Amino acid sequence: MNRIAIVSALIAFLVGLTAATFSELRIFLPAILKGAVVTVQVSVLSIILFLFLSLIAGISRSRGNTAIRWIATIYIEVFRGTSLLVILFWMFFVMPEFGLTLSPLAAAVLAFGLNYGAYGAEVVRGAIGAVDKGQTEATIALNMSPYRRMTRIILPQAIAITIPGLSNLTIELIKGTALVSAVTLVDITYAAVQQNQLHYRTVEIFLITVMLYYCLAQFVRFGGEALEEYFTRHLNKRV
Amino acid sequence: MTHPMIQFDKVLKAYGALKVLEDLDFSVDKGEVVSIIGPSGSGKTTVLRVLMTLEPIQGGTMYVDGEPLNRMNVDGQLVDASKAHISRIRSKLGMVFQNFNLFPHMTALQNCIESPIYTQGKSKAEATDEAMRLLDMVGLADKAGHYPSQLSGGQQQRVAIARTLAMHPEVLLFDEPTSALDPEMVGEVLQVIRDLANSGNYTILLVTHQMGFAREVSDRVCFFDGGKMVEQGRPDDLFGNPQNQRLQQFLSKVLEAG
Image (cartoon, rainbow over all chains, first blue to last red):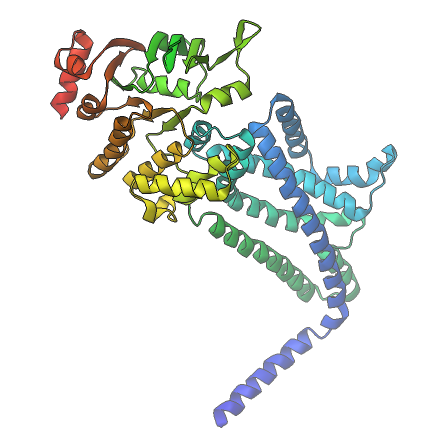
């Protein structure tokens, strides 16, 4: 009996202490969560574009004909070789000069998708190159078309190899979306800065900010691990 | 009109200045079983690889069943073959590799039906029936649902043979099919090849280091050295009474090693 009372009192004390410390949580948390929604929005759309471009440009650069390979190479080198923030400014502030006005969200998604797609393409190209040459030779001996060879034999094996690299880039992309405040979007980071200016609860606000990013990164991590497990379930490690 | 099943006409294969095959003239008749032996670097595997179009050649013409493979006839002129032409001629060839090269993400059965379905347009049921018959023939019907990583080397190579046969080739190319196997698995693979050779249904080109097996199954044995065919003949003549000095040296070394 006594022990239960002590534990209950301890729990009540800790809850009270936490409530007191984070008493203004309900004041600034909604704004930060609204920012989290924007971060997730930008991230998810950018990730879709980034993975799509990685695949297309990566395949084009490894197996396309000369013209396609050139286009892929130019795309990769332009976006790898330029600053993401500057590309973001281009999308939002410069494109309207050429008659293309983008919403902040569209500008952010395009900038992030194009930039990370260039890095991802190199991951995909490396993975395609890492698939055993004997696999290609077997498809030739079986008279398979180049399209079937890529979609049925090479890619299923290459994708397993891309996952650690692409997971890394995905996590980096999510954290990198803190840049979108430059084009007027209020994401987690910018919302936190605003709330800090209003309430001066620096420790709590930025602790929550860090935790939110960490949680998002964990989603990607577990997703990546599950996918890797799935794609490598039958592959033998050549000895 | 009779023509050889396989014919090499002055075929040149070179990597830069290094000539791997030099002006090779070589032919194999329909139904013939020919073994190619020789030291490493002699170009013997290259003969199979260029024929299977895994590597381009720098000169000459290869013919399959009387039709040019790497060239084609356009208005009476031989020009470089289109991809469609190569694909059509290549469908008469099948190749079994030293390292099996099974598709690791597919089961034994899926390996055997993949190309029949997507390249030859067979129905899945038809391709599966045929593949099961072939897997049964190589003694692996009970392993149809296994992935390559779950099979021994000898079993993988037998699946690879079934996969090749599923495409109904007329010519079988075996590239050192037992070289990557543990000794106790060599026999089971050789037995399958022996059955294919004895069936008389296939023209077979076999690159091998198994001299006893080459002597047993071949109609003819060719000795390659330095990118050239140095000597060829019936197995008993070539092994029993080699004329060329390099062949004599090669055989004494190989037989010494056991």
